[in-house]
Length: 433
Image (cartoon, rainbow, N blue to C red; front, side, top):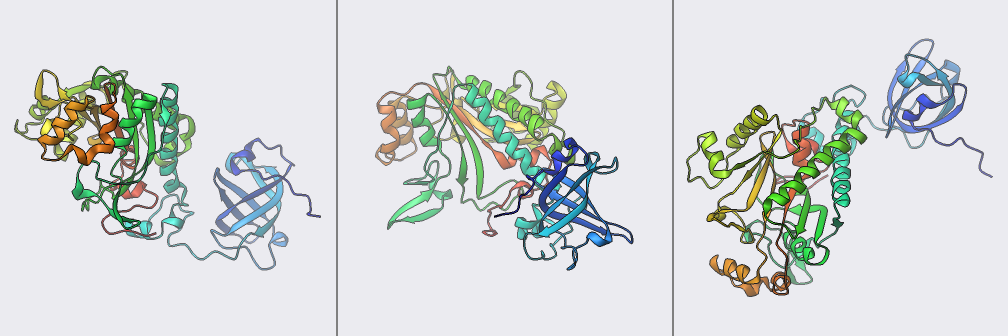
């Protein structure tokens, strides 16, 4: 028979344990401090840190396992106001659960992680253990909870679309080609075509999943693979209905960070964004004038986005600003034009703290308009037959948006490089770990 064991206690739960109660901790050795009369062992698990106090006669004969070794600690909960949560573990037995861990590439017990970005990326499976580093993804996880919870409450259905497709979503130059049983196929740039078609089934859909861009960008804001949060909704009046949903989603993401990642916010010193009751909106042509750019510019440059972010904060006390009406020549063929002036589109970008975070808008929904738009760019509608069939069978006015998760978190923590908040980034140079 197996000997009886005490149920595992998480370190964060120790504060609520009655002193004198036997407890079992499981985690990694975070720090060892060996003094003449006593040894302190700090244990780290998914919920936090706990202090274990060992007398000389309680030390293992083979010695204490080094930092990062996975261990089980069984002992007595003892009151100590100086210990984390006011409770430490004494009269303890330390049992290694693996062989002694090798020395990590950086000291994970220090309050801040001193490793440079190349070291962090090369040793991500180990260095993401650092509490401050892990806190970045805790913000991402809470954001995902807020994204899903908000949309679920608004009657959306979560869907999943294929990541191997027969043709490029937006352009053939920026796709990864794959051999699909002897036929050419591509990693999906986005779920755009699928989520539009699914509006005809569910009316309101969203997806969380990877997207792939074979763009040779070696910048601090681009990745070859990232997590896209996609939303599409039907029976809209125009893109302003989409912006209303986007506003609710952003507010919900911030709320769930407050509810479920407060410790991560505190650890990282994050200033959560202000999401106003109504998103401030500026037309693209007015945005160009505001930043002093030529009126014929087809897009906003990074310095323009930064200037508009400052203006939105000063004018509206808002960390976000929607820029609507981008030129049709700069938008994909499925974009709906502005009804009173076809030079402009019913589309938008959302700027978050000076960086473009979201792209969205109203889509075309009439089959004849799609045929005309595809032919206008010199292509044959037959190449889009599987996509266009939904529109031939009747589709409601619809629109949506896509938000990059890593870019959102990078701006939350004001990271200098998006790779700092990406668990295992894929870019122009990196395919491992």
